[in-house]
Image (tube, rainbow, N blue to C red):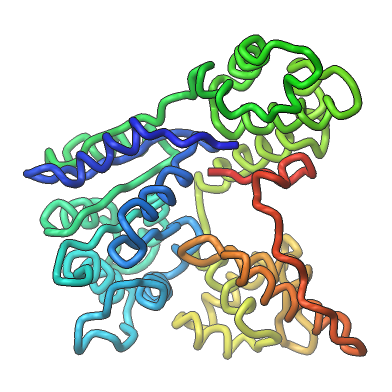
Length: 379
């Protein structure tokens, strides 16, 4: 349902191809289409020449970020630098060096598509990393490679870029136009004799032109139209009700922004560790996290306090096994593909149904097709 934005894509590609090159910074709130745009740019540039990194998913500790980017990169790690760094400052410097020194096939410039770049602020609580974002800006400005950045926190991004080098170009994600909405409406929305342009104008107005909201409204109207005449106001009421799609999307944005006012990257790192292997003792978690047992014990107590992890006989596991499955699938630099989902779900089913080997699950429907079932893809 999220429409392609060819004019915007051309603007961004022209910026990274310009001489001297520019670094576009795409700014917009939740559901404004930033992630969808980056993923289309990755496909347009080519997956061997461009790396997409969802920093919101992998900014846990500097060491683990470095490992995640290298392991999922199409670009080879420079010889002699593949070993894992032992300190937070050293690991972050190695990440910047990778951004600066990576080369695409044939020796051309590599392109990095860094989604939610302000998440790197998580690292400012680590020793020696009080100026993470300023260091990143300086490194990207001096690199011969190409970069596109995004952020959902517009005011913070403007403050960061106030004194940044001239290469950085702020691009505010535009709202959809009524014409773009009309072009993407499912036929079922206007299949009962209604007018497509009228429906598009109503959806555009009620959804404020934001792609995620527009998509949720259109999907709700399409579902309602199968049982009679649908109108945009009734659809909005339905999806804004408790557990409706927009209730969930707005709850996500609300809770996320409150949480990010402080942020606990180390807690996410522990959840990643336990997603890879459980149960683990405090000492085992501290070793994998590369933190002291004392600080790790504090982190675990915070996770226990909100029922994310549970300790049995001094060994820690997820309280919710399905949440562990979600972390395995989604806390990675790029979204899982259909094969990833099928494989992880199958393995999860084997652990829950040990007496029977369940068949491989069918390839999941695209996220957009699931919006009517209470699942919204948030850009």
